[in-house]
Length: 249
Image 1 (tube, one colour):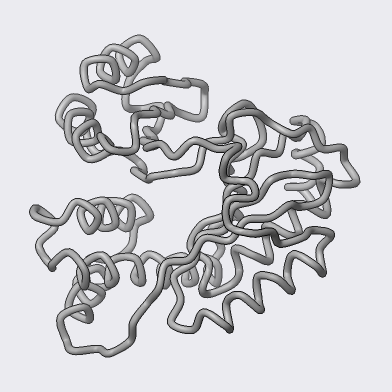
Image 2: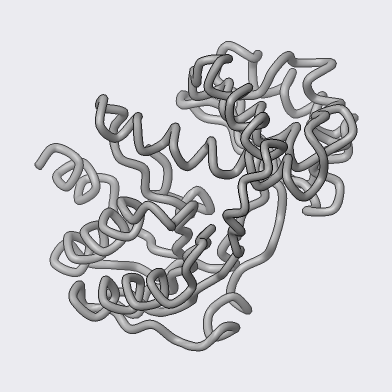
């Protein structure tokens, strides 16, 4: 799970049970299809598609699924997906950013707005919270990639801006514009990363007590269950003991 301490307070991910995994694959497939449709089906010539395929592989998505998603983009499917960002506040005044890919703007807006209002939050205007975040690239490696010094040296050589290492692995931050270049350099020196994504990194965290934390996790969980929602980011700071209680519930 990511999102309970320091700047990793970005996304709240649920466990990979079968039903949730199917939903995850569906969202990964949608991103692959959209990336291939707008930038072409060749990952070598399409940076967005290359990252989408890389992330699908890191989640053990079958190769056939990846190929079908790319083929769908070239099969004359007239479904047009629109990228939309929603911003608002959750319980405890926590800032929340929601990224969606949708073929029906009205459906998605209604669903996201309803989810916020039913779970102690409030949807705001575009720009209402994004100024509290930085748009950056995030590259994640498992602990097996190497010790902290090895990863730090590789990250510096690749042009990254920051590295956080702990027993869960290594999180490398770089400029949004250089994500593809830094990722390629790290792949050459450390191997295939666990994930590569453009993210919204909070500039500062908002502390949340146990009561508000439970409501906030419910809000984020419902948002992530929405088929149109691709990513959810937040600036919450929740005590490790409280997070442990919530994840064990």
